[in-house]
Image 1: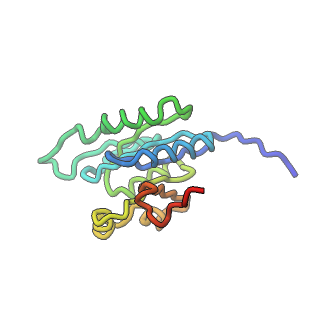
Image 2 (image 1 turned 45 degrees about the vertical axis):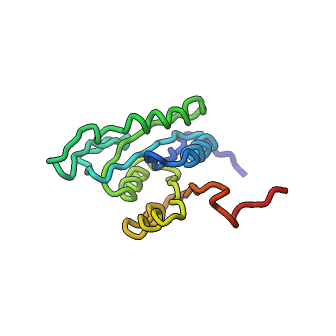
Length: 173
């Protein structure tokens, strides 16, 4: 038996974030990052833009798909989303940052994870509603698409509450 000295920085944890997302997705991602002693990278993907340049830290310069409806505010990380993340993560003891990405959500998250050599990608599951089912039907599941193109773990955090889970909830003992 030998000892193994860890000389590398831990690989970051990438979490896909979006407005209106239940907080438990980011909270669980923060717990993984804390356990690994890793940075948490909160990435939001704007499908109405595309990448024009990329930096080694995973940040990108983007342009709108339709230049007639260009709004450069869409190129930056949403300030309200960043403020919500700050409420959840400030004081957590982990190092975290935000990144605004562009394009197809699974492709952008996958590319970011490859660029950063992330330990895992975390996304929220869709609630089992007609709207969630229709979204999966027309756009496909981000989690499923990621698992098909990634060699690293993809963690899906359930976004339903215990009350919505119905028969999946455990009785009180």
